[in-house]
Amino acid sequence: MNVLRFCFLALVLVGCTTIEQSTRITTNLQAKEYNPISARYMNRPTFSSIEKMSDSSTVLAISRDNYGNTASPLRFSKDNVSGYILLIDKYFEWEKLAMSRGDAITKEMGKANSWGNTISGSLKFTFHSGNSAIHYLSISFCAAGTCLDDQALYFDSKNTQALKGLLLQLGSGAVKTESIDSVYK
View 1 (cartoon, helix red, strand yellow):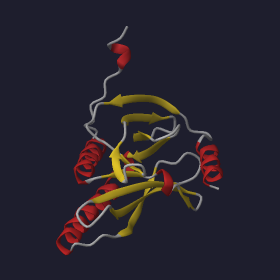
View 2 (cartoon, rainbow, N blue to C red; view 1 turned 90 degrees about the horizontal axis):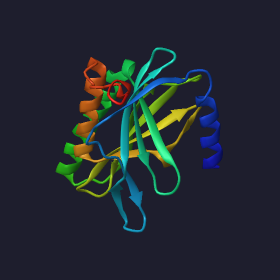
View 3 (cartoon, rainbow, N blue to C red; view 1 turned 180 degrees about the vertical axis):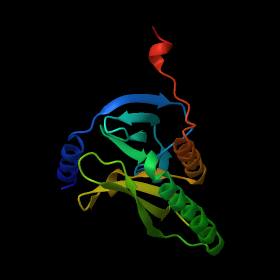
View 4 (cartoon, helix red, strand yellow; view 1 turned 135 degrees about the vertical axis):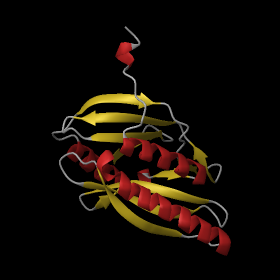
């Protein structure tokens, strides 16, 4: 069933709007994925880029190479940065509270609009405890009443702070992008 949901969402997302320009940016951001063999969340190759869409939108695209043959891209819209920052700040509040109480919980914090192609989408932000001492921010894409939680990106506290920094730069237009065409002629 998950494959069918993913295929449906992929078809919806490839509708009318296209990526006009994608510029990869250098970051220290690392998304994690649960590795059942080692029974822990592990860093995966993570790539970030700024994408200019044919509908004039600007997005921060973050993609993690998963175990197997899939990738998990998330697109953060420049127009919705303030909503993302509110939820990230909520993660930090909950992390502090959970650490002080020794809690281990999984609880949705909220959703914020995301860039969507032909339908509106959102990003679901979830607080997820690996245990009472390690807490993750889980972000998954949702559209058409379905959330791709099995493709969620997980960020520890350090990487959640890095994500917040990237989003603040996106919102202010300060993300440094350089056209590779002007360098590699």
